[in-house]
Image: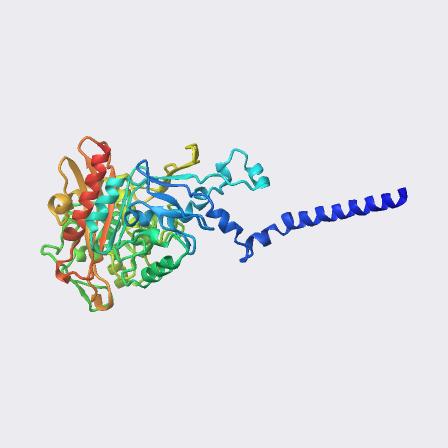
Length: 487
């Protein structure tokens, strides 16, 4: 009898061991395969089973969560959704995540191990932390000024703090309300189809994902290259520039919109945007030096993130001299995002140093403990400090004496550069209106804001488009908002 009991006990032990081995195989060796199986809804149920953490602007959340009582329990909500859509992106139960909702997803959904004091214990127990918070660098007043300034027009605004790289405003118009995509019902599907079918592309983040010909705002880069290379040494000396200027190796003549550009000084050419002077300067500087300077400002950089990716701005590295002439005035194949052009003017305002732009000040746990913080990092030196000082002088002249008068502010020094960029086949498209600039309060020791504005108004009368008339007033109000907040 004892023998049979021993055999039964041994069989039971063997069966128990087999169960343990199988449980180990399923839970350890095959767990990833089961987790990743499309038929397994548990990860999605867990993901949406608790509220997401918030994205914060100016100390207040601009996101929230709504308890639906459904299997995917919590849906994302947004405060002032269209205003902050280029910053937050969307978090959809069907269509995924974009922008900060995507770049900081592990913090917001609670899966980041840094949110827990004992990450290894969470891995064993599969406990889930409460979603953390993402505190942004956005200034609400500047964001709202940019949004209201663009109004019904298509375009974008990017504003930075030159000394640190903090992104103060990031606006794209037209915009949309991300909350319409949050759920998983018919309404979300209809909204997705409607937004993707809209010819105005409201979900396109024009501030960081759309590149434009920068037009005359690129003359800041050309002027920096000319001064650094010693092609120009005296801002007020004649430049030996014909008007019109025949593009090298062609019979094509380049003209100006203003008088007085023949042999104009760099100062006059910059203030009144003489195309002929800057086209010839680009040729005199040469392709290699122009390419190096453009790259130093951030062109052709495909790795820029803030923390989500930014479309690379481009300056062609293989051109003939005629193409180089056009590229030097921001035409031909030269393309830039508004954020890139904000970096250009921020470099001028910051002594030639390009700070790495960043949108997230810090991330925290749900209780407020800091998980990670951001700091100031220098990407590169775009120009010599003496060149930056001279360019600041030139940019002040644009606002005080030239085409950028509409950007002027009381009790502040403002520098800028206007631009009207041609595009389309044979330049047939309605021009894009640009303004880039910086501002410094009278009692400040350094510029406090750098901004770039582009307006692409397909409904405007072609002759009425201008950087000074359309874009500069928007930039002025954004800079005013930042200076008021700083004061």
